[in-house]
Image 1 (cartoon, one colour):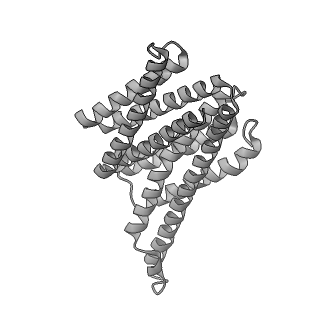
Image 2 (cartoon, helix red, strand yellow):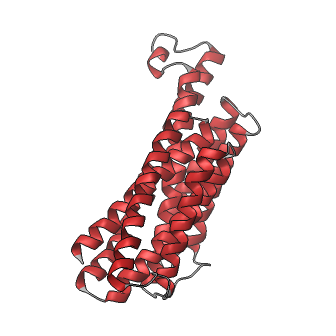
Image 3 (cartoon, helix red, strand yellow):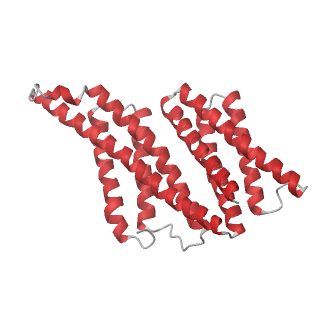
Length: 272
């Protein structure tokens, strides 16, 4: 069971990294990130296929007789389609959103399979899902904090340039264009990590059969934070917002994050 648990964890880690790569390509049209994401997803497909073949040989029947087996096979089908679409089509948003949904299905299938075995290592695995949920959320908050700092530096330097003050030390901040790009890059990394973290949290709550509140203030707050930063990306990419305007928006977005992290945690009945 321990070996199987480690294999499942490796699959999820590789798949998570693949999602980050596809998101970077989706936002920045980065072909290198797309290639890395494709090969990582190919590794996930190979590991999934190995599991299916082993189960087919050991049980001498196709592994779709239970809900968790059906979900695992469903996830394998979606990963297969994703790999084909990545090679045959240029509509990358389909590949990314398909993989987000597939990651949720795969994580749910693995959690249900582990939970059904009811061993100490199974309980540990479900606990690790919670740890991963918290870790990814905090790491994403770290990237959003860096983005806020870069935006604050941008606004400060912009102010002194307009006033023509502080010219002797202002160069240490870096040029405005670079600060804008750094902030954008940090948010591009933070958004997929927070999305994956939220998926882990939902699956953990389902696996543990806890009383999960969709209307819990912290749950709503986390989804709101994700939505605020997705809107940042839409404003920048679709509407072409740059410079001071998007820096002001990013500063306001960080205030929403702080409210969720501190105030909503105190008001939550589910989180602590």
